[in-house]
Image 1 (spheres, one colour):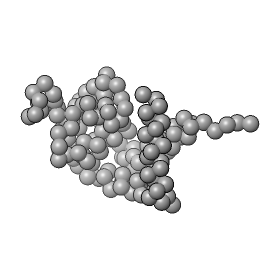
Image 2 (image 1 turned 180 degrees about the vertical axis):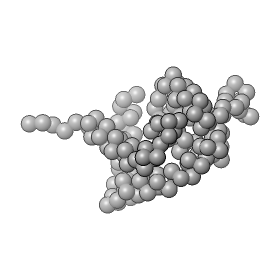
Image 3 (image 1 turned 90 degrees about the vertical axis):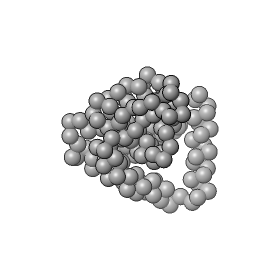
Length: 144
């Protein structure tokens, strides 16, 4: 008997979500367009544009190592998607800002993200969604 694996289900769900989220953008993607992870960084920064976003925020939110986050941000700077500038609050820290190119992209993709969130929650009660979050947070804590 094959016992179901939590990891396989999570990875499969994440892959399906990634494919669905940016599938339209892949069709029109140009050589210097963002990768899937860069898209998620852009959307995160876009949704937090009323406050300073720092590299550490991305590391924590996406559970990435500093070196991985640094490489993604370097590539995004090279593509003209983000700029890093000295933070007003802490001169040792750099705030991450979207370029005009990235803002235009985010405005197009934001609606897609909202639609995807609704699609994923389709048929789930508020209580089930809350339970899902609790379970995922427990799993994440177990893996720390």
